[in-house]
Length: 189
Image (cartoon, rainbow, N blue to C red; front, side, top):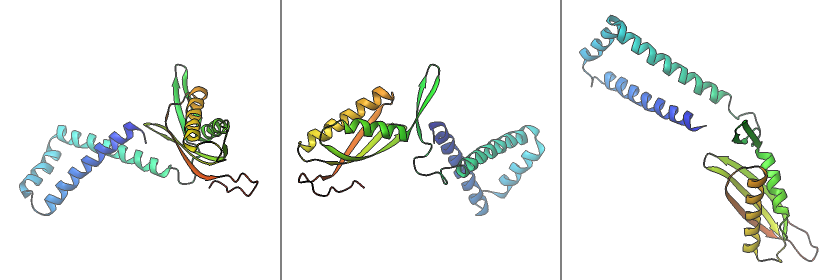
């Protein structure tokens, strides 16, 4: 949901809170009966007041329909990550790079670091930037903090250079160390 939709949803929610409080107050007889009757009578007797109510009702209806269709069209039937992309505006239009493409680029960059054996990458595009989470298996020959820092740097530089996407954070989780004696290697989940 973009910033404009969040702003509209916030205003819509506040307006519904006010209307709900007014209806509750009227139903509990906290609002004088004459005030309610005079408000309704003013709506029927003055075309200017009735036009104001009509415009407000139409705006509420449009916003309600927009949120209803947005929720029905949501991500329910799509697999996780399908269709997600990072938008990069240019002077000629928008460039959209899918999450899957960014994940492939990150895997390619991380494999260039000596000592990385297996890895799995998840890209999360958010309004504050693109976040990358890497789960990896290392060989245990190089110091892990230095290796992780190299992986973070390579992924960040590669994605920013190749895709033009600003990377907010690269988190690396080392899940295991590969056996150097040719033993069985555990897989990254």
